[in-house]
Every structure is written in C-alpha cells, then in structure tokens.
Image (cartoon, rainbow, N blue to C red; front, top):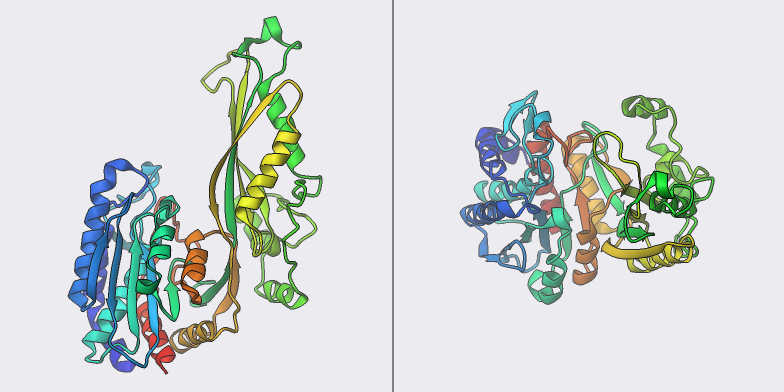
Length: 455
C-alpha cells in the first residue's frame, strides 16, 4: 500500500479540486427549483465514473430523481462489492449562519466547508477515488465493483426500494458498503452496527366549527390546544416510558455483554450538558443509561405542536383546531407499520370527549442490526486498523438510514457501514464540513478493504 499512499499524496490537490466541482452543484432534492441541479449532479458523477474506467454506466430516471448505476465485473474468483451513496443534499437554511456560501467550497483549518461535504458527496466520492487510484496504480481491481448512487436519500429514498426489488440480479453482490456515517472521534474509526428505524404520524384535533371569542365562549367550550396537550400527555408515563399498549412487545433487551460494550465506549455527561446548555439529561426512559436510551431503546417524540393564533401580539381566541407531528425511533425487531397502528389506536381511544381526532400516517423505515463478528465486518475492522493504527469502535447509531435495511433484505447481502465523517461536522446544519485528514486515509482504507476481502 506504500505505492498507493504516494499516489494519493501526489494527487491530493487534484482530488480535492474535483470534489469541489461536485460540491458546487446545489443538488437539493427536496426543492423543485433544483431539479435541473439534480440532473447536473447525476451527469457529473456519471461522467466521472466513465473517466475512471467503470462500465455499463446508466442514469436511470425514476418518478423522482435519477439513480446512477455502473459496474466493473472482470474478476472471476473475487467477491463483488456494491457501493451505495447519495448525491442529493439538504437545504441550506438558515443561510445567514454560513460563514462562507454553502455551494462555494472553502478550505479552512484543513476542513472543506460546503453543503454535502460530509453528507454524503464527500464520503461517497472516496469510493470513486479509491477505484480510480487502484486503476491508476497499474493493477486490476482486486474485487468486482458495482455503484448504485441515488438522488433522493434526503427525502426518504421513495423510489429506491422498488428499484432494488426489480433489479436484484443486476445489483447482486457479496457485500454492500456504505459511507454515510461517522467515526467515533478524531483518529478513532468506527463501524456502525445498528441503526434505529422510524415511523411518523400527524395528529389533527378539532372541536367547534370555527375559532371562538375567548370572552364570549371562554370557560364554556373546549379549547383544541388544551385538549391536544391533554391527549399527548397520555403518550408517556412519569418515568418517560412510552405509554402505548404493546409498544415494547417486540423489543429485544440488550444482553449484559452488549450493555458492557456500550458502557465501555465512555460518556462524559457533564461535558454534554455543558455543550447543550442543559442542566439535566432526563429525556426518554429514565431507568436506562443515557447511551442506551439514545441508541438501543425505542422512542416517541413530539416534533411539532401548533394551533390557534401564531402571529405577533394577542388575539383572544379559543382555537377550534390543533396539530402535532410525532415520530418514533425503533429498534431491531420492531415493525414500523405495526407501531404506527398502535400509536394511532392509542390516540383515537384517548381522544377527549367533545373532540374529533384525525391521524395521518407518514414515512416509515426499518431498523438495522448486523453482527459484528461477520466476516465482512471483521475485514472492514482490519482495514481501519491497517490505515489508522487503531481498531474501530462498534457503535449503535440512534439515527435512521432506512434504505440500509432495504439493501440487506432485497439483496440478501451483508451491509458494511464504514464512516469517515467526524462528530460535529454539521451535517444538515450551517457550515457543514469534512476533515481532509480523512480524505486520503478514507480512500486508502477502502482500497485496503477491497484487497483484504479479495483474499
């Protein structure tokens, strides 16, 4: 790998400049005015894949934004790796909090600042550069490679599951590798072995047929805001446990070994409270340690709550309508659709007298769990060890990447989550960035992983 390290060092400026080109494209999937930018980003990646030597390159149009496919299949006795990533990015609001324009990549303090720098253009680009570097080093790739890169991850990947289901043979592989997560800390790599699932609901509670004057009707008719708060208060008990019948039925409790592994990662409660401006960390189930609560326990959160007058000043009305948005984070073995149904049933059964409650169901995503002793995970760990000089931490992530479970189930292949971002790189927030120290190291780790699994 010394020859490859020298090549990466020599090409670093060129590689970073190419990443800047991609980062300049405002490929925001959630905003219709950026539809052309999405197509532009897809074309840029397609052309880059062709330039580095990939074959059978396609830009596959969907009902939404396109999926890019490419492959290189020339090693008869080697495994096939499918690389997944996404080229769409989040909106940039609030733009006034960016120190430099979000789509004008800027390097400061050995970090590249731009929307998409770490989520996920920067990390996805590492795989393209890894393949290019292996080709440029004069060798054949040690494994067969397929790319599947989408433009809708930031809006829930609505069209990718169907694409996976309809193209199982085309996408068949021995492992799926995804770099859309982070390391444990600077210089400390991590492999994410668990992701929580997700389901969403929206509640609308109605009372009278219009808002009413609080002087003429106050004390005599129901206030939709009051009734909704009353209804939502039934969702948790005094210790933060979700108070929905059968919510925990399918939850598999952590083993003593798993609990010790989580505890061994370490946690500075005072530092976190200080950084968040909090005096207590008492959310969720108080009978569980903080790190277990945020990674290995299911949750029910009220994400939004509104009703009645929202403007400046005072308007003395009794609201006739109130709303709430709810999401649940789910752990392995929980079914998102089942949980949606249970929460919906609870809200309907506990609806206060004199109110009409309507529940609309939102997005769902399955949880994901992979055994850390699987061969592909262990080869990824070895690759990290070879490049970073440290064995990776195995971590359970509290967030959700719903498409990971779709890949695992549709292709019946192990999924390896090899992240190269760092905590605090502001993904989804102003001043998103990617530490360049993980640029060459990330490429080298991916190349090492390919070499290791080829044997």
